[in-house]
Image 1 (cartoon, rainbow, N blue to C red):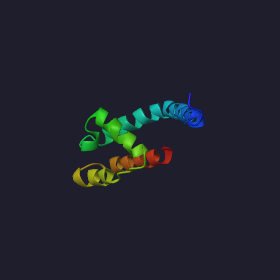
Image 2 (cartoon, rainbow, N blue to C red):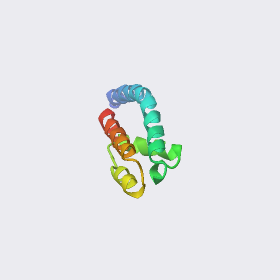
Image 3 (cartoon, helix red, strand yellow):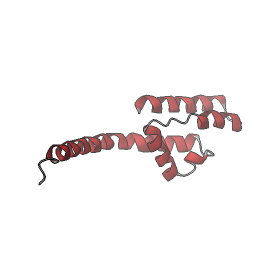
Image 4 (tube, one colour):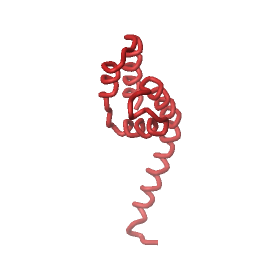
Length: 98
């Protein structure tokens, strides 16, 4: 109704539509990575709960890559070397895909 804001409203609607399309594509990857991180790092506070893990992965999608939990997990646990390598590969794939 206000001609001054018409192009901006149209641009906002277009960006919002494209954003929802991207979110629909990434939803399955988001859920899969949050479950994988919860399995690999059950003692990490960021992945102790699946809902907190989902939120953490969403924050990681924005660019806040917290690599400390991968390193700390290997130092705190008496884990198998293969498990550490798997955790680092999982984090690397996550970084690559997102």
